[in-house]
Length: 280
Ligand SMILES: C[S@@+](CC[C@H](N)C(=O)[O-])C[C@H]1O[C@@H](n2cnc3c(N)ncnc32)[C@H](O)[C@@H]1O
Image (cartoon, rainbow, N blue to C red; front, side, top):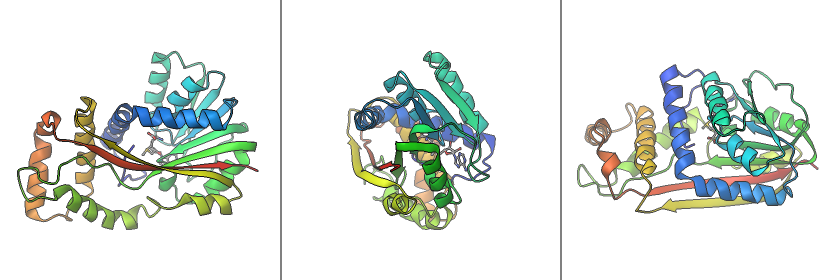
């Protein structure tokens, strides 16, 4: 889910790379996601019958929600058809295709016609939209009174590397993130912003805000190495011209080989914030 530098009309290979990264994110952070969905189940009394996954990507949220809410129909919306293709394939593989429906829509172009929802989930998607206040107003109107809007966001892509890699200068990843933050503050200004006041202004009652500081330490599952590689490659594409030559070489050497897959000193550190807002 970690994500940055995502342009509205990405070339197909970028969409593929993002989709792979989202799938790895789901695999590595499975426990976190399960805990979140369990929390939503408790807070809604498990009664949601109609659920919307906004900016669903490869369907991480849609699948988890359809599984935990066995009586619900889930509508998964994304502007990228290749993402929706993956959602449908996964739904079939899990026998959930009768209850997960995909809908292609660009939220910047307008709001799709949707039946009233009991629960709307938006994970790492809201920071992409051009007019967040309009989208929040549309979510409010789409929820039935008492319906719940769960917004999950992240501040930055996760970090993985030890401070001293044994090659190059210590602190490489921290410098990469600092350089990227600088660019992202212009390109994706909503990344890492505080959605609570915005939700309240849009007319929601913000019932909870939870910050999850996730730190997975060795031994990590095999997918963690692939996740680290995918995230660092994505990080690298946002850093053109922003790193000095030595750091660029160290990072490129690390990413050109599969060396990272066999490192035993990786950790996964990421902060996710979730707002739970209710339509009064
Ligand atoms: C970082 S991904 C998150 C995917 C998924 N929610 C997850 O948590 O794994 C953001 C998704 O939002 C979608 N998206 C971005 N802007 C959008 C827009 N204007 N309309 C619809 N979908 C959009 C992208 O195509 C992408 O699949």
